Length: 240
Image 1 (spheres, rainbow, N blue to C red):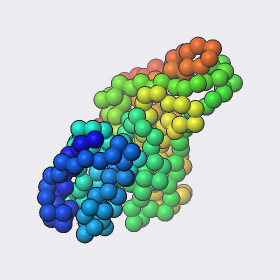
Image 2: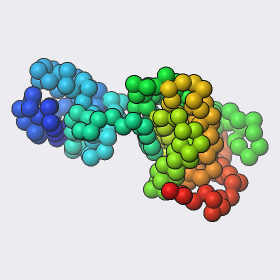
Image 3: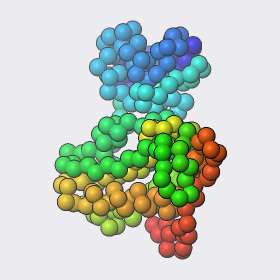
Image 4: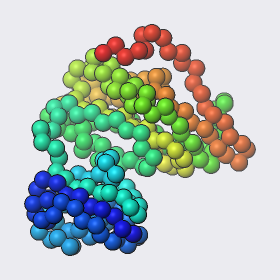
């Protein structure tokens, strides 16, 4: 397949061009494989490519993300301005997320503790209102509002636990099979007693209340939407 690859800043200088049109094997169609292939073609840039950020079609991409024919892939160093003191990450991905990559994104020089809650798709459920056996789940989100409400949850966490530094809230959407990761809330802090446990629990509970995401359970016995019973009030509006 044929793709366009863009290089910026240091990478552009080392490789010597800003843009390349290249052919790659379909089997090599991931960011990780593309890094390796470019490193072979341009060994002087191998160290830079190893740590470069990536984007596909103007959206951040990660090593396991696939590349399709006609895509525009960009590699570049972290943008100028330095790492944020209190990093935040909010996503609605359709692909599995990497727990280690998210933890790294929340870690600063002061970080001594990261508390992470993550959910997975159950195959069997003994709970009223759910299918006893699930084949897969379908997640749907009101995406712009969902991302805004994730940011609101983070702001609420910061009001309650002021020593929490990094916050990540991730909710998968689309079709998920049994065993797939579905949701994540993680908080980092200098010490384990600085509120990261309580903040992560608050974050996942609050996500279930005000972030507009719904799931449909699909199994051999049928399918059903799982709906909550929380009724938002004016207090649930973003107060910032």
